[in-house]
Every structure is written in structure tokens, then in C-alpha cells.
Image (cartoon, rainbow over all chains, first blue to last red; front, side):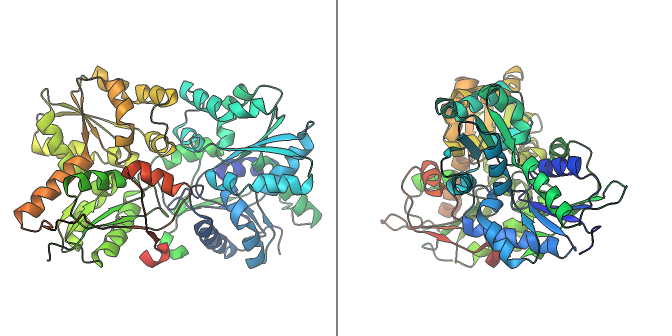
Length: 270
Length: 270
């Protein structure tokens, strides 16, 4: 494995671009290949069976591009398919769940942790299982917040309706007196301001994209696989569809301009 | 063609079940085969190219089941793929756009018509083109309301946040003094109460599913193809995925219990 080989990242769509944003702030010299399965997005409302099938196809696409490491930048795919991916591909595979859970356990003082995510992530209790495996004394409270994804995509990041919806979704976490909240969906960092406003200063928000980026950095460092180039890395973006408003939303998520997006026919993935 | 043959209906997911609900209230004796492409839902944010490809696959699946007529119960697919489907399949094909536009023109007095729908439907100006083709004097005002779909699926049909969002989306239609509003997405009838509340009694809401059902009835009547059985028709539901909360949402949309849902592997459609 060569240290200049790219890091592969896939997501069900564009949410994973918030992970690319974090990753490149930690590891600006790494080459990155991103695949967003925008033709079949979202995964969060689909069955486990379907999510596993799609995740294998996404990983297969990237594994053909000589990647040195695979990031599953989709909480749903991480929660459902990570074990299958580790088994099937001869690659280090880093998902969102374990890094996010570990970072949350470092931050919490009262061991009362909240998790928000899609129906799939929450339905599988992915974070709760991971948190309790590491520290069985942890109390975990979970809530699916499916409206957060379309609100983030609409860009209604500071809208009264978003505030109302956040208050309704998050109200129970206040009653449970959590001190740490895991943003268990890569779209949610876009709404971090309003979530912080609702939860208050005393609740730490955990962005799993940040947590995963730290794990990737450690992994590459430990194995001498960090790209030592002084040049900024190249970034290639592949999607299975170029949907309406793609550029606008993608750039909001990535935090900068996006260029050279290549479309992959979804039939080629099957 | 036999009059006992079923009517085929497809949609990108479950929204089309509101059309099945209307259809069966008009034509209770018809046999119905429904296909919902829940593995690849939604179509409304995808490119025209992808929507056409998927629509052909959906129609192919139904055409193998001896249907006597095909209803495209998805506004996005109707707006983008209807001509291709009519050309490719030797079947009467009825979409949402033309019936909805015609009914709106029957209702309007001031010829100022509003249309709400997904980004794809609105981006293609499907209703606007149809309305102006029939009556060039019509003034059409269009607005994409992407948050309405997840709100309908969440069942937040009378929530304060839904009201706020509806007020923001619909505000411009009041300024434009429309007297008729086309619900250009099969999810939207679920939110009809709140839309009516925001728009007031003087604005007629057009449900394209109702409009299309009337067209289907006329079509079958005119050709002697109406099922003359005294028995209630049988309904078969096929989906490409059985997503989380499927039954709960499907039953809200269909207005009754749903049984015998069969999963079709999405790879078989390709």
C-alpha cells in the first residue's frame, strides 16, 4: 500500500461531504475519492437488507480505485453494514459509530448520553450498543429526527420552523438531563447552531465526522501511511445521480466550491 | 383486452397510495396492482434522466402483469417520463399532470392558478406548460415545497411547525390572488387540512389523484373496459423495499389496512 493512495469515502448521498470537510481540515494533504449514491438516497428509511446490498456496491466501486482506507461516511450504512464491509474488503474500514461513541464517552461526565439519527440508525440502536459495550454504566437515550435531513438540505438552518421541530424532537433529552448529544447523521452538523441553541451550553454536541477523522489520522500515522506530500490533496467526487440543486447543497455541506463531479450510472454498480 | 384485467399503478414510493384510495372510491370493483419503488424513492430530487430510467423499469414490471391500463401515480414521473412511457408501452397511460390541469381549469374563475410540488415537477414546469397549452390566458404561479413530503410521512398533519412551514411556502400565492391550487405531489393530500387552513375557503384545492381517477373511469367506460363484477376488486401491493415504518405510513396514505405486500428485489428491475 502506497501512502499517496487516496482515501475512499462513501455516503448514501451528500451528507458525507460534512465528513470530507472535517477530514480535509485534519488531513489536507490526503487525496480523497468520494462516492455519493445520490440515485438511491436516502438509506435511512430503507431496510437493513437493502442498505447492506447498496453499501457493498458502493464499497466495491471505491475499492477498484486503489484506496488505502475506506470511510463509511453514512451513519445508517455504518450501523448496518460495517461488519460485512470489514469482512468482504481487504482494507481498513472506518465507520461513524465507534469513533462517535468513543468521543462521546470521553466528553460525558454524568454518563447520560443522547443520540439522534435516522430511523435506521436509531432503530438498530447502533450507538447505544456501542456505548454500552465500552462502558456498561452509560445511560443512553435515542430519538429519530427524520425532518432534520430535509431541513438541512433546504438550508433552513436558522428558521423558526426548524427551531420548533428541534424543540419537539429534543425536549425529552432535557428531561433526561443528558450532558452529551451525538449527532448520529452526517447531515446534522449543518443544524448544529439550532441544536446547540435548544440544548444549551451544558450539553456537548458530538460530530461523528470529526471523531472519525481523528481515528483516520491516528490509523495512518501509526502505520506510516500518512501522505507526506506538501501539496494539498486532490479530491474526486463521484455520484450516481446529479440531482436538482446538487451543487448548491453540496457546497453548503462541503464548505467550499465543488468541481469536477462525475456521474456513475447506477446500473453499473449492480 | 379483458375487462377483468387489473389496473396497474406505480409511484416512486408510497405517495401513490393516496391515488389508490381515490381510485377505489370511484371504481371499487377494479382489480389493482400497485408498485412502489421504495428502494429508490424519492424521484422528486433526482435528475430527469434517472427518473425516466426508473419509470420505464417500473412500467415494465407492471406491463408483465396483464394490466389493461397504466396509471403513473407520481407527479415527478408524470412530468418527466409520460411521453416516453406512452411511446414504449402498448397501453393506455394516464398520468397526474393533464387530469390535474384540466380539473383546475374547470374550477378557476379568475384564471390565476397556483401549483405546488417537488423540485422536479416544479423545475420542469409540467403543470404550467399543460395549463397554458389548454388555455394560454391562464396565469400560473409555481413553488417547490420539499418539506411537505417528510412532514406527511412523519404524520405531522396538524403540527404548529407544519403550519409555519406551510405559511412560508404558500405566502406568495396569497399575494398573487390565486383561486385554485394544484396539489402537484401525491403526498400533499395528506396535508390538505393545513393547506386549506392557510389558503382559506376561497381557494379550491385540486387533488390530481381524484382528477386522474375520473379520467380513468371515463376511459374504461368509453371502451367497455370497466369491470362489471359485483365483487370488490383485489389489490396487490409490490414494493422494491419494505422500509422502516412502511405499514404505518402506507395505511395512513391508503386510508385502510394494507395486507400482502410483496418485495421485489430492485436488481430485478434493472
